[in-house]
Each structure stands twice: as structure tokens, then as C-alpha cells.
Image (cartoon, rainbow, N blue to C red; front, side, top):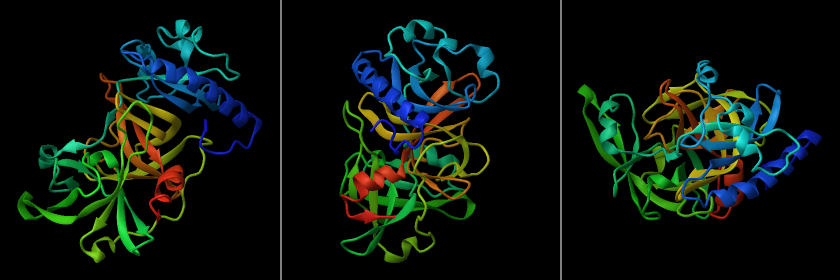
Length: 328
């Protein structure tokens, strides 16, 4: 699919057709040593006031005029406004809707190593891959149909060794001290590992059945992208984020090297989530679940502008969790 929801309007149908054409070009250029683009999909155009076909462009090859960055918010803009963008247009397939873009750094997975935790341990309780020290966030509950057990869904790249990886939780204690305690093990796992886009998810089966009693099951999943909306999230390192981010785009695929993701929502602006928040659950303020935080890119280092990638929960459920016999 070239948007992962069914088009309902003539504009959405044109958008899906444009993204399909653009996706073919994107896959060809992604094989280059220096890719032109890191991702392809759709994003909200503040200039045109509707969704537009969209590219994440490589900051090594393109530049956004500083005047367009001074607003302090990373937005998709028409390609012709980007330095070097006019030459790119001639390489792209013919589209019905003008293509928009954002210039970002190479996308990076959002896990972190344990030494990063020391600054935050008095306030956060990350999960830890016992084998590697990678940090993450245990996002939301899932039910394992075969066993009727409860598991915790998080990002798969936190556990590079896959199924069977032991999982710990670093609990905060008095006077800034902390301890690591057993949480469970990875019972289901998938993560990007090659040139093709992939899913990024893991289910942690808990050692103690009552360990997830504090959380509620997910009921509403965001199904489609129609407009820019504010979002809320909780990250193990960042804590509660309630007023600093909006959903602004949807990549059908994106990433770099051997880390390429399927179906990611794009969030902005600056510093909403950080390394170690992998697996953080992201919701709209209305309560719809978007999915799991998996990665990030710089938009402008001078002003600390970032964009974040959140893997879509609905298509993850349809294509991965159902195969694992899990559900929200």
C-alpha cells in the first residue's frame, strides 16, 4: 500500500497514486552510497492546507534556507523552496500534487546505552536488555492469546539478540540510588536488519503476572492521517510529554542503512523524546494510539530541531501482532 489507510476522497486517491510513483523512485535511489532521500510518504502542507506527497531529504545534499527554520518548527515545504530542490524535481516522476520535503540527518534508532540513565534515574524507570545494556520504554499491554498472559509491547531494536533476551527494569530508589530487577524475557521479536523496510517490535512476557496491573489495555487506534493534530507520550527518560509535539506526516517507508522502517508517523518539534525512549507509546490528545517511538533525525542542529518516527500501531497489529497471536 502507498498510504496504509483506504483513500476516501478524490484528493486522497490522487495522493496514494502519487506516493506509489514516488516510492518506486525512492527505492532505486536508496541503493546509492549517498541516498538522496531517507523516506517517502505523505505530510501536511501548511501552504496548501492538505496532504501532499513527501520526501525526507539527506542533509548532506540539500539545505533549507535559514529564514524558513527560524520559526522554530520543522515543517514540510515544497521541494522547489529547498536549496538544490529545483534540480531534484526533474529527476522525480510526474505527480498530480506538488511534492513537499524536509531535510534531515540520517535516521537513527532511538535506543540508548545504560550510562545515559545515570542522569535520569531519580525520575525514570527504563527497561534494559540484560545482554547489551540497551535502554527502552515498556509501552503498552498486549494479551497473548495462546497463554492468556499479559505482555508489554516495545521496540524490537532494543533487543538485538531477539527472542529469549532477558529484560530488566531499573527501579528508582531513595537518594538517587537505583537497582535492576528482573522483568521478564522477549517472547516475540522483529527488527529492521537489511535493505528492505521492516517492522520494529518486541513483546516482553513478564516474570510476575501482576507486574502490569497498573496499565489499561489500548482501545482506540489511529487509522488514518487527515490533519495535523497534537500528541502526548511517555518516555522512560523524557517522562510525560503533553504539550510539545504534533503529528505532521506519514512515511510508508524510511530509514537508513540496515535500519529501515515500515509505516511511521512523523512527529515534531524539538526534543520531544530522546535516546532510551524506544518503544514509548504515543497518543493523540483525543486518546487514539498512534504507535511506538522507534527513531529520530536532526532537522537543524543550530536550533535543536528534531523529527521523530513512530511506527503505526494499527498496521503493526494487522501484519505482526495477529501473526504472533497477540492483540491490544
